[in-house]
Image 1 (spheres, one colour):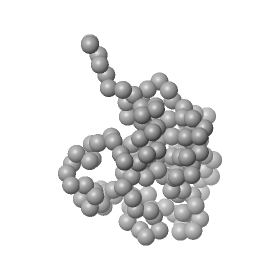
Image 2 (cartoon, one colour):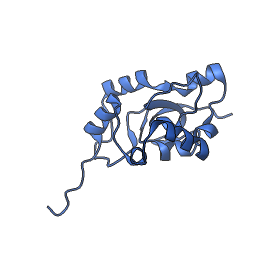
Image 3 (cartoon, rainbow, N blue to C red):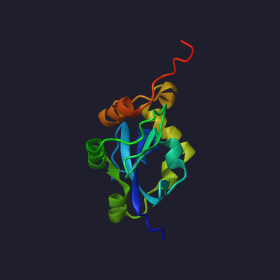
Image 4 (spheres, rainbow, N blue to C red):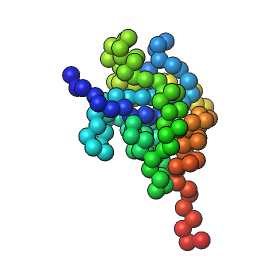
Length: 151
């Protein structure tokens, strides 16, 4: 068994969440995943977490992934505290329920079913906006701006 020594916070769309009564069902959600950290590198328990998340932040406050990232790569301590407070914690869930259902989370057919329940068309799948206030704050503070090259 792997001994995780860190936590990574990923902002995920609702269609990635397994449909279980003990997992919060909301539109978009911050999830605290256990991670293995070696220096500035994080290894996650499932390879699809990073590629499916809209934003990923390490417990060292560094932004690992965001769309159109700016040069500022570390979030403020108070923002990190809010992130820790608001996130669904996979480790706590596993203490009560056993291994988290990562395979179910990323199973293609189930993602499609869950997506059809919450989205009316394909534009939601490609959108980088969210109604989540914390994600919106972090994105506005640390996300990049559209290129105005040549103007």
